[in-house]
Length: 200
Image (cartoon, rainbow, N blue to C red; front, top):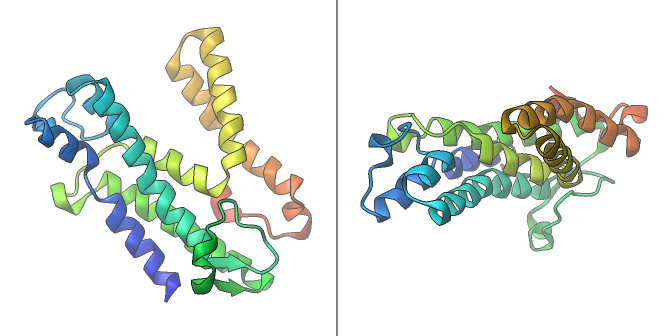
């Protein structure tokens, strides 16, 4: 049941229009101001800093929560969960290492569903944000250590160049390399069970 339920719940959670609801609480229709986008950046510019930060956190949680849940309720035997949630152990489905690819595909589909739910929310005419914060939440649930490295890289490039866009591009370009390094470091490439769907 977890195999199809995780992506479905991820899409529904991702589809909650956080930015729209936050702005509406202040009497503002965010779709009629600024870029018209309901994401955190537009909320920050139009509604204010604290509301933008709140939206950023909520949008990131829309990616983090379903993926953290998925990695806990659908596990690979003998593998550590990156973000362990012990209270979910009683519902965990533990599959043998030979089924690693299936588990990884379901987890990545869950991640994609959360981002797609945010970007194409059915509650606002299948429109939404750009998915940056939600994607960051997804990555934090899948590989928190790698996200830490990418944040450090982003900050270094930004401090040197003073360009957010350049820092973002460098961090994004480094993501596949960091993913491969993490897989090699944990012996996943050597035994052939590295997370190919995540790399793609």
